[in-house]
Length: 223
Image (cartoon, rainbow, N blue to C red; front, top):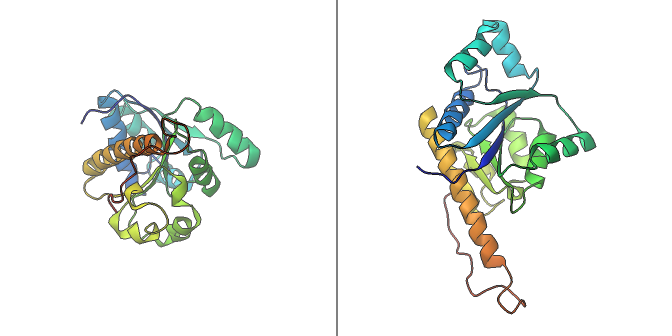
């Protein structure tokens, strides 16, 4: 797989707590894959989040040492929780030079919502929902607007929460090993970015400036 060079900002619940939160292993594999593809990616998680706190209580500093030792190519930072205007201003700065923003379902609801709201032609956003049938996340699935994101990437068991609320071609379902999931997320994100670019071209005014060109977007897509 060969990707155009993009700058990725990835908001996730925890990159440290692999036992408490299996998707952490998927995101680690994604970071390694992106690094191998000469992508620029940074992972951001909330400081003091319950998953990482639980991992550190169980393993102590070894949890962080293992991440730094075994995954040296990953750029990982913790950030403070923000809200209101402070959050919007911080997100604006953080994403100002980003091409792609991924947000894992389960991060702070306000942050996740604003990532979607900041979707632009130059900033593609993806909601990632990898935990099948997680009851504690069900309310978030129905609170966040999937149509505000460039795409939604989800486990097949969670497809019903998004079907009919956004275009079918904006939904990608993924399952498999962490490495398979990482590759599917990268490929699905790239496909969504290219589809959005095609849609933007199709929706642009025609040569006379009075309306869209002759090509029309086709229905279809995964999901």
